Image (tube, rainbow, N blue to C red; front, side, top):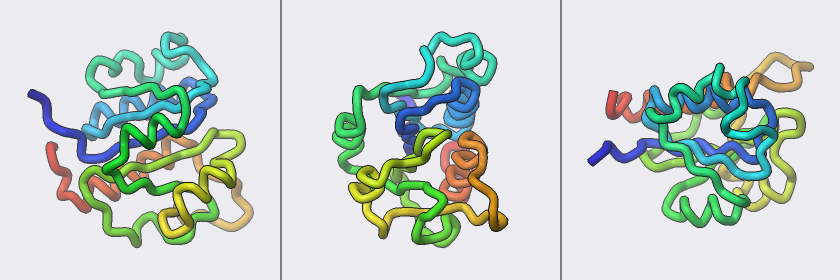
Length: 158
């Protein structure tokens, strides 16, 4: 019997295979479950995905969902936080709990307004950045948020 995941990472319609591969590797190393929401901008057997983390696929728990509704239904017990450049709170100001989920949007366009509205502004967080910059790399943003949440849980399972 495995250790239950401490957190969930949701990639909504991810587009860039190396980012997803790096997030697979990150989830394998933190014990988080990765949820990929279709459509995906790649096949899970893409060579570039393999370079980033497909060799970690057997060490990570990865679920693929046909749409956001299916993903949120599977995570019905989780608090979902949208991570977006315009998030209401800084990611480091939130007290996370085991079982929380972090929702990240596509690399080129972020989360659509309807998805942000569904999660709710009170559950939107951002990562501070210097003015006039667009956004961080997706895999880096996932790392920043996931490690802060895991730190708050005293790195449970490490």
